[in-house]
Image 1 (tube, rainbow, N blue to C red):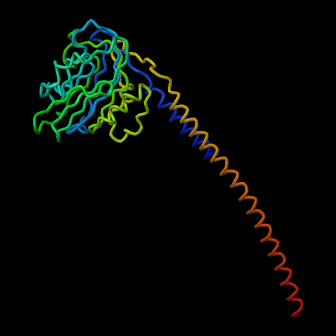
Image 2: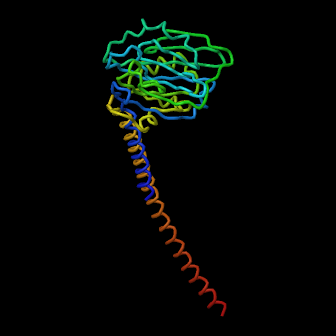
Length: 285
């Protein structure tokens, strides 16, 4: 029974990790989006936002990938697009409208986008495919505001068609710390199927969670890479656990046989002891 329970748990783990290998394909209309509210407290003082992007539609001038907007403060706390025009964090557009020339990846090809921000250093850094392409100093004391709405494929507060992305997004993750340039480069160089396990401690808003959110319009899953590495690792782990459990069962079987042998000897000794006591009793009489 114990072996069966372990196997069930491990199989569920394999199944739950498979969907993270899907990208999301967004249509080119204002009805194609994902929006939800989320507790952004872990990112109040610092964060890193990383994702893979593939442009498909080129009809819009400001194809917004992601927007975190707080209506209370009327502020785009985070606003990023696929062409380098918007690279805005904590309401600061210092990296906006100055890096478009760096966004040269051809339509239909994946590229990696990472933007990091820290209250302590007042610094925003933007990376493309692991390379640092822009740095900006932010306002002192300015933290990320809470209570906003997260949106993908358009801005959250308007249906203006000029802000529609209409492409594919993959492995969008929000980390609660500032990833080092080495870490960003490692993620980018690792490719689409890179295992992000070593960053689990600070990967708070995960791609797997976004895939489970409700969708509007024609947003659909697209498999980006076969989860072969993850499946192989899980299968190897499963085989290893199964083998160790089998070895344990064998050892338990041997121990049971030994226990039976010892029990038999004990019973035999008790019988002999009883015989000796009987003989001693007769001798005394």
